[in-house]
Image (tube, rainbow, N blue to C red; front, side, top):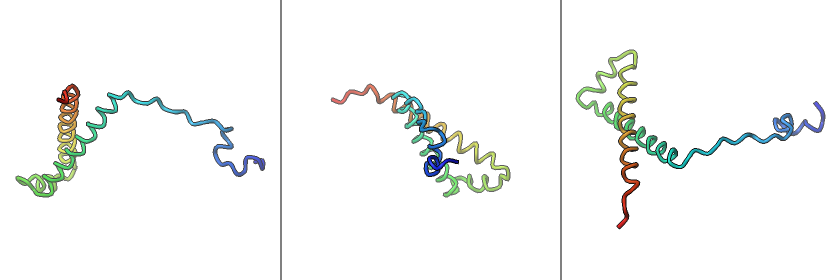
Length: 99
């Protein structure tokens, strides 16, 4: 290794090439992804609340499942539902007039 490249780390080996930038997502896709994220978050919090309070014995039933499939399905389906609702509400509120 030459002395010139010794202190530069990886950048010295790449010859000063810049990291390629990914294209920025369109505004509406980012809007929908953000609302889907919040819906997933609230759906997960809802399921955690069900398990923590053991509402109607849900926590007990999920504790007896050794595979974890029931817990995964409950989390996934609830999060997907909450995410879809959050996206739908956000889209419906786009055209709302501010009178």
